[in-house]
Length: 246
Ligand SMILES: Nc1ncnc2c1ncn2[C@@H]1O[C@H](COP(=O)(O)OP(=O)(O)OP(=O)(O)O)[C@@H](O)[C@H]1O
Image 1 (cartoon, helix red, strand yellow):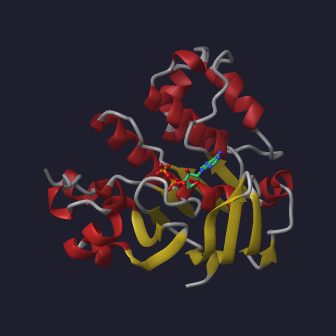
Image 2 (cartoon, rainbow, N blue to C red; image 1 turned 90 degrees about the vertical axis):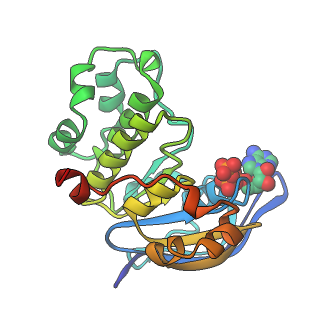
């Protein structure tokens, strides 16, 4: 499988303090790759280092081109869409205005966004600050999907959302991942189980495991050791195929 992103020996610091060290992994050109790990181990810092948002050393190659010396705006123009953890919508602007501001390409993919997020179409005139957390997450995802990206980085999209909304956001991401490869930071095991083909586990700023998601999730001992959670206690969300047979 060819890689869309290759990260080698990536280290980064914030305010002089090293937050990731010698991170190496690759992201296949299709599907979802999940970055997992306990709180504060460096998942968000890894995303920010790839985007050039924090000072970093090491090699980052996007589709054969080195981007680790480039500024963030150049990396964005090369085709990496970033959906940050705090969603970053403009609260005083309407949904439609938020979307229009995100359009970068000559032909923004409005059809895709309208198909994936019919609720946003209905709420086009609503101020984004009055949307629920789930709706803001959808808007943030929609903003990234408007442009023809080669890769999406999505940081904890289901954090703090109610279970029903988690399912909606997961479904939107599943659809989005059919059109663009996704590197996803996520803590929710059922969401990972449903979306991710591969996992990269980070601990104390280093990669401690990579491999197929299904293999890790089937090994309760490894899940407990690497992520500090009991896999057998995690609720399982049905897959799309299972739900359609109920
Ligand atoms: N702005 C900052 N200033 C100083 N230290 C920071 C800053 N942001 C993050 N860190 C530190 O960097 C380390 C990695 O943080 P990071 O946010 O990358 O972890 P994470 O795995 O994404 O955590 P979480 O799951 O809680 O989001 C932590 O020790 C954190 O305290």
